Length: 71
Image (cartoon, rainbow, N blue to C red; front, side, top):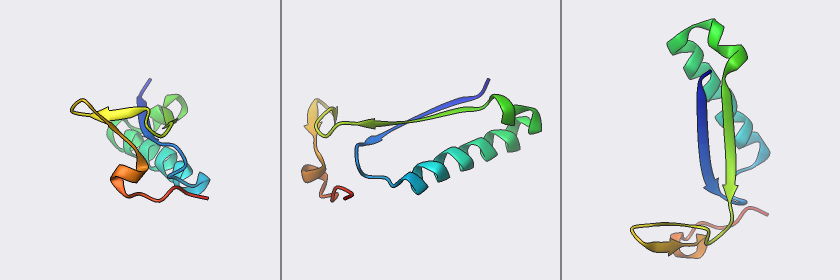
């Protein structure tokens, strides 16, 4: 079963954008493995709370990245 796990900052993607990630990732796996992969491809889009992630030992927030939160 093909599996992809995307972890993104919370409230930065719309429902439509999440749908696009899922659809396009599934299509990529189908392109690679063939149509048989469609029914078993699992795509997970996880939202990580602000400040719940970091790089290089530094906690990152949307404010630090200057990414406005989606309303």
